[in-house]
Length: 389
Ligand code: NDP
Image 1 (cartoon, rainbow, N blue to C red):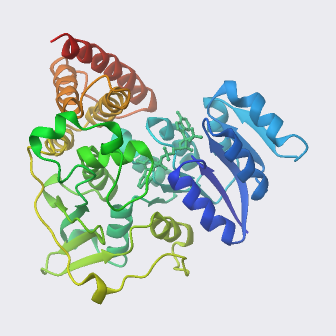
Image 2: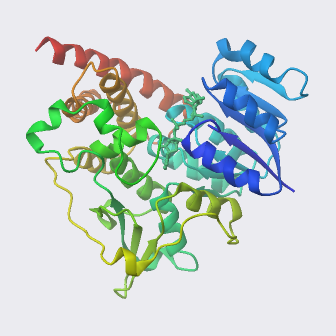
């Protein structure tokens, strides 16, 4: 029986993963969550996990109470999350949101565990480190982001050298039809509503700003080892084509599917095989048309920042992610406007670049975490000057 652990089990991707796990025959080793301890405990009991871990020490008492008498271990804190990745498993889902997902994923790779990677922040912050660890330990990272799963599937049996370019699609997000001069007034609720996908709040707002797509462009470069000139994004409002791969002979392979994360998760769970999945099938006659248009650089300034990060390398990805995460926190707390996020990230990157803080020949987890802290402090300081202006 396949032994599996789910990191970020209480989140949107985590719950979709558990939905599939619950339909099959799996030995569930560890489930991890954050504040939603009641759900974590209920799922651990339902799926007979060995251990349930909350990221937060102050939640341990509640978790222990909820698991009392079940024989399931309870643990809390960052170290416990990493220890959960030390437990022997065949496959883990890395679906913690944010840079917090990096350390447990790295630990699992170092044990030779197959890592299904939804946590795109890991690749953005430390792509070269992650890919090198996977190679060193002879294990596999399977992409779970729908666009990257689509590219991965289109590349099955193909030689990466035969790829001319990869096009990942974008819905344009919840504010795609809002007039440009109104974007500054957009609220977190408006930005947090997605036209096609049902996802966590943070990634949904990142879709509206296209910071999510910026992350995915970087993720594509890191995961597939492509040049940035080979990677494009295009707005496809229906979100039915997730990505296209164009080969040197001019052929284009497109991956289509209903906007349901259980497709990409199921592909990674069953890989290298395919198995039946409980996802909707597309009826092309009903769909009738598919639209595409180039993204507007003025509406989506995050895309130009991704270009800078891909060109700069080193610690630029870690800084970009931290600045983006912190700016997003400030927007969700209504301390800055929607349109302040990209300029804040840009100014933080400029400052770090100017002082030589993005240089790194070889990435380490410590370097990434130090850059993360430094960048957040800079964004906090820059946001204050923004408010004072
Ligand atoms: P959610 O916010 O829905 O869930 C995040 C999960 O991480 C929850 O289990 C949460 O616990 C846990 N968590 C939050 N903070 C921490 C922390 N500091 N330490 C440990 N655990 C923590 O996110 P999503 O499921 O939407 O996204 C997860 C990842 O997958 C992200 O990297 C996202 O970019 C990526 N992704 C998501 C997609 C989607 O459809 N949602 C699509 C493609 C990629 P709790 O809720 O209990 O506090």
